[in-house]
Each structure stands twice: as structure tokens, then as C-alpha cells.
Amino acid sequence: MAGEVPLRRSLLLRLLALAVLIAVSSIAATAWLAVRTTTGAIRQEQGQALADDARIYDTLLGYAATHPSWDGVDTALQPLARDVGRRIALTTEAGTLIADSTPGAGPLPTTPSATVDALAVNTALLPGVTPPGSGAGGTDRIDPRAAGPYLLTPKERAALHDTATKTVQCLRGQVGIDATVVDGPTGRPRIDTPGTDLAEESACVQSRSSLATRTATENKALAQLNALVSTCLARRQMAPVQVGLNWTWNTQPTSSTPAARPLAGADQEHNRAISACVGTSRREQLLPYVAPAATLFVGDPGGRPSRTFDLSPANQTRIIAVAGVVLLVTIGVTVLAGIRLTRPLHALTGAAQRMRDGDGSARVRVTGRDEIARLAEVFNDMAERRERLEQLRRAMVSDIAHEMRTPVSNIRGWLEAVEDGVADPDRRLLSSLLEEATLLQHVIADLQDLAEADAGALRLHREQVYLTDLLAQVAEAHRAQADRVGVTITVRTEADPQVDADPVRLRQAVGNLVANAVRHTPSGGHVTISARATDAEVIVSVTDTGSGISADDLPRVFDRFWRAEKSRSRQTGGSGLGLAIVRKLTEAHGGTASATSTPGRGSTFTLHLPPPPAPTPAPAPAR
Image 1 (tube, rainbow, N blue to C red):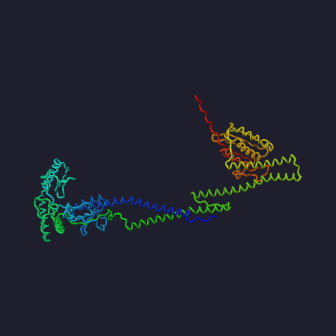
Image 2: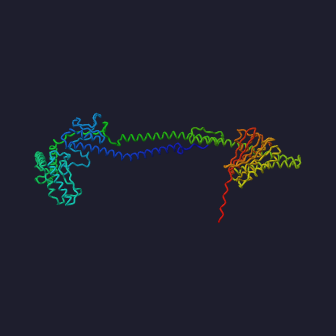
Image 3: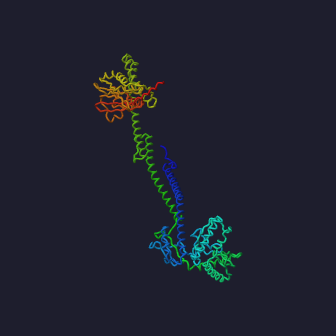
């Protein structure tokens, strides 16, 4: 017996390794695909959340910059909350609720989203936006929409807008510049010329100079601002400066200079001190015109705070745990499936080894209806067939020995009697010896025919055979033997059927059937040879009125050396090879052989042969 399969070659281990590899690859591929797929969505969601936050902050900041209080902020808060689908709430710095887009939605988040203060803009919530004044000398972070005392009167606004319109017409007509008028937060218009520097253009100078002249409102507001800045600088023992509309300053201001420049050559400390005073003075000046600072809370409509996805250590641990569980489940399922797969294979291996060692009864239990169960069924069928063939082989050896022993023993006995002078070698003795030798030759010839058929070496010389003539020849060849035992042979054909066959081999097959029928038909019985053709086949039948064959023995009538009569009597038994040769010769012609029988009433043996090929039409004569 072969040794056990090494563990490294075990099917179970290979299945487990394959399953682990597939599981790891699947997890890795799924994770990679999920990351690649969701990264964009997460970034888009985060970008949308940031955009919504910036929009909320900018809207409320604009409201604070243009209103002295938060009264009426609900008119701006409710539509904004509906648009972004978020809960928006404002409280004072002391925690008193100012406005809530979803009243009664529960407590506010513990962490505020931002502080809304028009005089202290959080530039981190407005990326890309830099409030005016945070440039040359300004770091006050005041919202540019906080106009306060700089807001022009309607009359001033109309006059400046008319001047700006004339300037645009001049630039378009004389210079060809595509200019537009843009109104600022205070109502002062400015000329927007994308991609063109007006400082280099000398045309339309007068109208541009008129547009740069400060109004009475602006002069009054700037005077108030400069007074505040001078007071601040005096406390620091610094000389006063003159601040312009762009929040830059000059030590020698002139009323005709609309935009002064910073002190030339002033050191950084001096500039920082002036910038701080300008920023402080502006906030002090604008304080009565803007809403007080408020705390902003942004959450979802259910009251929970807004969150964005982050791959925190807890999330990483959760992902690793899920992947581990998936891997363990995969390994467990694979082990169970592998055990269920290899258990019947081990049973099949053991049964095959027992069969190899001579146990013909080795079988395996069939469970289920899968491929393994089908393999077990085929194995059991093979084992049964092998056992049956082994029994047939033993019976065949016994039959061959018996069939050849009898004639050989007779020949030897008579020859020894002649040699000893007990018998005279007369004509009767020689005739008996010839009969025994002929019987021995028939057995050898039958075995040779079967051997050639098994090896596929049986040669057929096909030709067009008319069955009426062939069956008549067979009947005539066996009529003498039938007359001796009192059996009548009759031939019946319908429309003289034809087949494409070897006439010698076909005559041999039908002759074996007739000889077998005559042998098993009692005196006074009948044997009928018939033939007929259908569209699908040609049928040749031999029917007798003999003793018949039992239903248990009928499936074995074409087996080699099988006989219903076990006595091997010369009157009832032949070599046991005739019907086996009939089946082989019929199969060589592409047909099949079958038998039906009714015990006590006779049997019918039938050859099913393919029809002859259709004749090839003759070619049309050439003209």
C-alpha cells in the first residue's frame, strides 16, 4: 500500500492556501477599489461641506457688517439653512440664543463652528479672500462690507455713478478698453478693466480725476477716523498721520490726494504701530454700525454636529478587525468544505486500494448529488462491473478448459487405445476423431473472432446485400440440422430490404442466431427468419418457439460463455460464444443486437442495422 500523501501535497492544504490567497487578494482589491472610489466622493463631500460652511459664515458675516444688530437675522438664516440642508444657530458670546433655523431640535453642539464678527474676519473660513486693509499697512481683518459712516448718500452715489459711466464711455470710445462700472460696499463706483492698467493710459484723465474726488460723507468719516488715529498715536508719543480711503497713511496729507502712500523709509516697528492704531480706530469707528460678535453653531437638521470622514486610529482598527473576521470566516469555511471534499476522496482511495488487494466487494457510500457523489456512483458501478467481469473471466477459463478438454480427451483416449491395440483405426473411429477436432477448431475460431473484434481488427468487406437471398442461404445451411430434430425453418421478408454489409460476416451472425434457435427449440417447433426496413433502420429477427429465457437471465444472453443450461450438454449447449460473436459483428456494422423472450413460449433475437446510404445522383451528361 502506498504511503500517506505528504502534508505539503495535501488537497486540503492546497485548498486552504488557495482560499487564503483569494481572500487576501479580494480584501486588498476591495479595499483599494473602495479607497479609490470613495476618496473622490469623500473629498467632494468635504469640499461641499467646507463650501457650505464658508457660505454660511460669509452670509452671516455680511449681515453683521451691514446691520447694527442681529434683529431680523431669521429672514436670512432660514432660507440659507434650507439651501444647505444644515441646522444653523447663533448665540451671543455669553451663550444666549439669538436665532435657530431648527427650533426644538435639541441642544446645540458643544463645539462652536466659528465666531461671526464683522470687525475680526476669520480668513481661514473664507479661503482666497483677503479683506481690504490687510495689505500695505493694514492688518485689521475688518469685513469690507462694513461701510458704517462711509456709506454714501443717494445723491453722492448718483453723481459718482454718472461720472463713472462717462469715464467708461470715454475708455470704450477713445481707447477701446472694455471697461465696466462696479459699485463698492459704500456705494462708491470703480472702473473695472480686466487685464488693463489704467495708470498707463493718459486718455480720459479728467473724468477719472473727478471720479477719484472724495465726497463730503467720506471727508467727514475720514476726519473722524484721523482724529481717533491721532489720539492713539499721541498716547504712543508718535507724530500724527493722515489716513486715506484705502486705509494707508501719509505724514503730509493734502486734500487733493485721494490715496496717500506709506511713510518712505519708516522702519517696520513704526509702521506696525501706525497700522495697529489705524485698525483699532477703524473698529472703534465702525462698532456702532455693525452687529455684535456672535457664536455660530452648524450641525445636521437632527441636532448632531457636522462631521467629516477621517481615518482615525479607531477607524483603522475597525477596518483591520473586519478584514481579520472576513479572513477567519474564509479559512473556516474553506476547512469545512475541504474536509467534506477530501473525506469521500479518502474513502474512494481506500476502496480502490482494497480492490487492488483482491477485495472485489469494496464499495463506497454515496451521499449527496454533487460531482463527488457522481464519482462514487461511477466507482461503485465500476467495482460491480469488475467483479462481474472477474466472475465471467473465471467462468470463461473454466468453460474454455471444459470445451477443449472434452474433445482433446476423446482424441487422446482413442489414439491411446489404437496405440495399445485395444481399438482398430477403422472408418468409424476416424470419423469420431474428425468430429472432435472440428468442434475444437470451432471453439478456437470463435475465440479468434472475438479477439479480433475486441482489438478493433475485424475487417469488413462491405457491399450491397439483398437480405432475401442472404436469409434464404442461411436457412438452407441449417435446414438439414433442423430436419433431424423436427424443427421447421421459415423465411419472411418485406420488399426485399437491402443493407451495406459484409455478406460473410452478416451470414455468420444470422447463422449463429438460427443455430442457437434450432438448438433450443423442441421437436415440432418453428424458427422464423424475417427482415424488414424502416426509414431509420433495417431489422433482422430470428424467432423460435422454444423454452424461452427467464427475465433474470435475459440481460446476460450476449455475455461470453454464458448459457442458461449449465449442464453443457451436447444436445442443448454450444461453446457459449455464438451470441457474443453476434453482438460484436452487429456492432462492427454500426448496429445493435437485442433479445426478448417469454418463458415457455419462445424467444426473439433482433439485429438493428443502419439503412444503406442514399445513392449518389448521376452527373448530367455534357452537352
